[in-house]
Image (tube, rainbow, N blue to C red):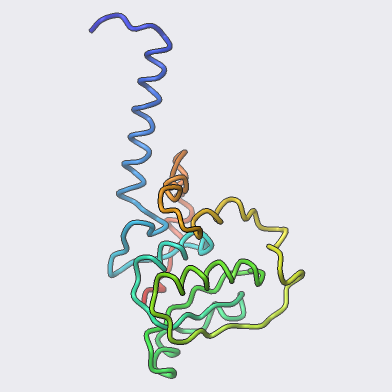
Length: 170
């Protein structure tokens, strides 16, 4: 191998790291942006994961709210309303954050019913100031290309979230 200058070696190292990063993200896919298996589990990062669940799960009834709605069993709701429900309630979510989930669900799924909580948290039309909305709002726009940025920088390698996962599958 010829002697490469340090900028070329640095660039090659960065490309190799990016390939490792994106390959790991593809296999782990913790936000379910590209696929979701039958035994999918979810972490507490539902703000990020809901976009992937909406794209890859099959449901026609959406349960959406804050922590008060998070414990509603989707199986019980499905039996009660006669549809296939999924619970995408977000802890501490404002109406604005819930509207992101509802709008993406309506665009991607044949929604028949929405079970919505009307609990009030602060300013209704703005994001919760305690939440960094820029860390996930790009997942809810119409562009599929920018979704990959959810995994850039080894963000997929979150061992705490991996070990704290629970089953909320449809």
